[in-house]
Length: 551
Image (tube, rainbow, N blue to C red; front, side, top):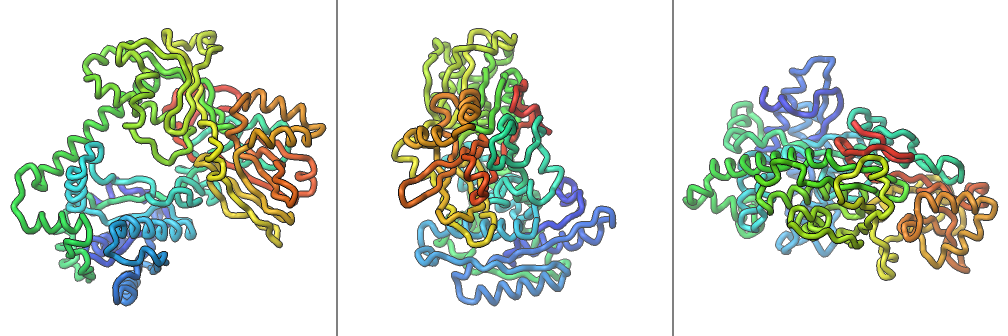
């Protein structure tokens, strides 16, 4: 029990959720958590709620889910059965993509259930043998970077763009420690539909989201079985887990149980491999953070999604020659990814996709002459800053240029893929939060008679919108000149009223610009937040409208 509680997240009072399949590993987790609840003091009171997912793809799954639920309830753990509603095309377990689809629908059901109850932590019962199977699978697939194995904790997977589940929702539920990880000079929660001096204020990023924890990774399945037997804990066997033809994991489990494998593929060897890879990963992270501290971010403007940075000259680090070229390049790529994630529209950015950009931004690694031209990578536009304010501020790093990084301009065939529609409602209710272009969370209150669209500002619609701004035109143009000059204005979202005549831009929500008639009638209102970003440890020197730091 001591080993379980040493590093677990429940050091504060609250409710923590358990994903329980009914197998021996998850039933052991449920037993340990119910026992732990009784040992904690009244001042550190925690409670657990279990979720049992019924995939509904085999006969009797509903009966088994009910039996698991009853067993948990008898141990004092409130339990909810989550029934997956499958699309008709994905109900057959034998389909090639069934395992990945089942994982996606399972995590989405769990994440939504947690969000509805205001639960931020989900415990999973992955154990040591699951870790070994995962490492074997990644070896077979050639994923060297994945040989660290299953993470002990992470954001919930498979829930991208679901508000309140994936990296969002903290501003709404009043949570504290995790939620206030960003400290901004202008702490406004939202930008509302009005044109005032508030345009200078920074958008507050989203916070919160559901995180998953795997407290049993250090325990073998054999030990979990012994725990259940010693404490008369009933578990439920799923016969599909023994079908070696059904999934890749089942096949590996069968091979490990049936055949004598080379020593290099033994359980101790694979766990040692994982440990060594984690140690290497941590060393690279330590070096990356040292390099990152020597960079300089002069501006991070979330209203338009633009960062200005001068990357450090790596020649100043004495230990650089001790890193083989490939390793140094990988560390530089990890540094670049840390910056890119601030403004990219993509959910993930792979290290392998950044090697070309690393050569452009860190030419000292290849002894090549710096190339000053603009380029695009991972949906972002990199532009050298010719007017180098960094040097004037005494923040220069040798002769390397500073760079402005922003979202890549939308292509003509891409705009239609980034449109959110909000139909009119009879009652004055806010819509659910929707993720626009992977960067902005937006919700709309639409009591007009027309559908409201959120889409990238179009160059063809800009002239009419500018004309209709009327007395606010000069103020709006000043905002755009300072915040979104040139093509940057066409990467920000616009609120569009769809009428019978034509679509009409009525607001630029992240900049606080709105037509007077829309604001006065209050038929269309909007709230905007930036996506969750991680600013801790970033070298942000501070500028108006930029984050001043983070916790």
